[in-house]
Length: 310
Image (cartoon, rainbow, N blue to C red; front, side, top):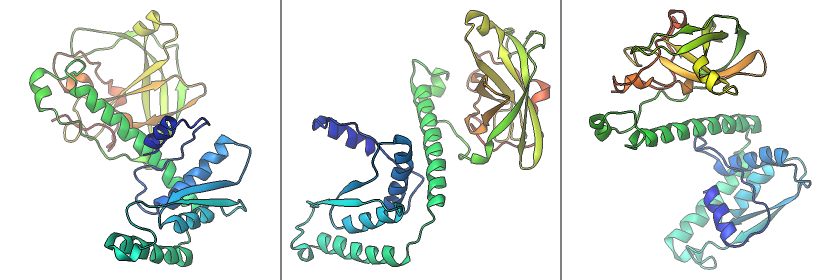
């Protein structure tokens, strides 16, 4: 809706800069207040140089919307209200139609409830918005991958599986599996040929060891650098993290899963297991995929990322 509103304003020749403050799909209740909180979060980033603003809205909920914004901006800002008419019923004779009566009466009750009993914790809403935006972004990436797999020009599936493809399966997003890991760098390791599911043996070197914690368990995984790609492109900064865990065979692909990372500028980096994916060998035997080294077997389940392909 935010993107559609921006495009509508552009088509109406709105010349000024248009900013958007959106709330994620995971926020299902008190969305007006959530939008006000999102706006407050974004205003701190935009640094527009002024504090007061007008709220433009439509219809009978205008007073409640204004109340929600005043609750979110309880820092002395002046918030004006510009109200437009709801064209779905006659505002002057609202009580003569069922829609008009229902909207006005329900908004009246909602306003008094919000004024008397709604005392939100703004920090709680901020946390929900931040987490919800991460979930929306993750779901968007999964949707794009489904489109990639469903396209006959790009899909790694064979022709028979492509006809039956109805999307990949994933664990629900879980912020627990997005964590900070300490990188113990070791680029002096010798280059070696990594075994694959075919005779192909790409050249890798161990770049270092990641140390992290999940549910109180101290864990570590080796991370690798593709030397063939590095020789082709000296700016190549990708790192390869194959791993296995206790979900393999039953819930996830038996050969393990992969994560793609980038060389960090410090000795730590973010590892997000929600982004882990199956090698192409999980979809068709014609692909050549690196085998997970024995040192990267985790003795715990990782309930995140892509599940086993049917």
